Image (cartoon, rainbow, N blue to C red; front, side, top):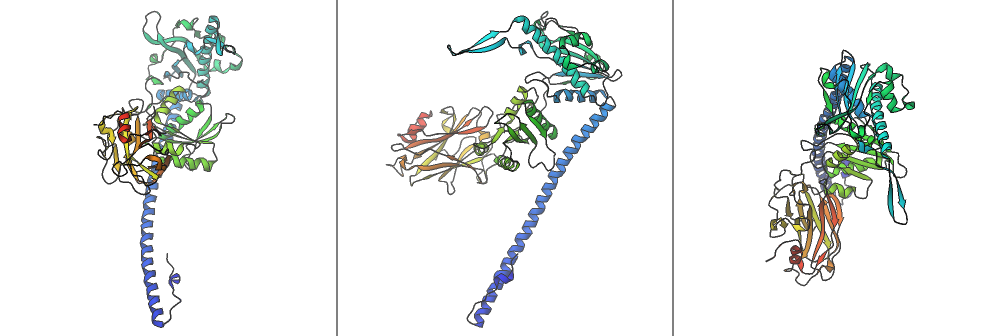
Length: 579
């Protein structure tokens, strides 16, 4: 608050002048005092609004945590009561949480629980025959500069495949009994199958290659590290393993989940979990499972005081490994660049080697521009689904299993831009006057004449691109909603050309120190893109193009191609007929 002592006037030749100076000082003090009071009142109101907003966020987070914890408690109590659904969910989760399965192995299960016999009955998918490579070894032939494969003997490949199947069966049993802290299992009936075509009927379906009924007491006495897997499964546990699994010779399961009489629960089939609808804590756990499946150590952080970190990961790989902080954003709309900036600050504060931002949505050019050259990695929703599937985990994005490329076309208002628009401001040195234009293209061809945005066509038909009045220090500006660009468009090209009416004899030799500023709708700068200088004799120049990646994100590619025939020659090169 203002201090009146700072307003005192010590000078003045006469008493009247001193009195006038004192009155003026008092007036200035009172004016500043009232302004400060108003500012403080506004600050207090804003602070109260922030506190209310924060408390609402806290209440929401706590409600989610309590709901998740209540589900855990309910599941645990259900297992203790031997509720069939709870038991199946619990042990299915134990199998999916296991880090022992090699990358690419299937994890599909159908299970039911016989509470009277305390027996879990389940079908578990086994790897196919091609899991054993046909090549035994590969040798590089220096003289021929090629690799030579040595084939694996057929008998050896068959034996290895039977060994793999037997080990898978024993591993499932081991994971189930190890997770049985509540003591719900007296025995487990396990049927191992592969998806294929029945050799006798030709129809697709499950072909069972192994089956076993393992009592807890018998399995507990085994020393798995010392056993021969095939002998253990067939002799010690009295199970069955197909003599020729490579030819899909089936065995008859002793008991199927459908025969138990309770509801059969299936996981890992086509019914993948929707990442959008997943419990937030479960989603973070899924991301942690993904990092563990990729060979890293990963744990989820506590929901409070996590310092902006959702998953702590450690890559043990020498040289390129180290500490990784992971943030998880379960969004439907494009992730704002501020989230990427916050992650970078967290990486610096935590002293981490890398930061990874995982989302169910996508990233705009501003995010990629800021992350470029920094120890940051951005994983969009489509990339996340692909990684999950490649590492034996399940997940989809909505009904389509991937992000929808078509979104409602926004209408650009004349006042304030919607949040999904970016402003591209162009600046350069020199006094030459330029026309800055934009082309919405597929490859090197504009979609239509109406998708060429310039002074006579200020916006595209759908409003996804339009010209704007530039504000200093920019000399030209356009705005674009990358999410709303037509599905067939894969390039958004920015070009500049000499205005022949203003500078009929000029060329681009004075076009230097050029750059493109990427701004949000509030005109906050998100990043800067450098542009090539112009060359003598050229009157039009491709500044650069934003190109759509396969995952829906957009990257900037520097241009530089010049034209001596001005804008007419340039747009003709992009397929526009100039009359």
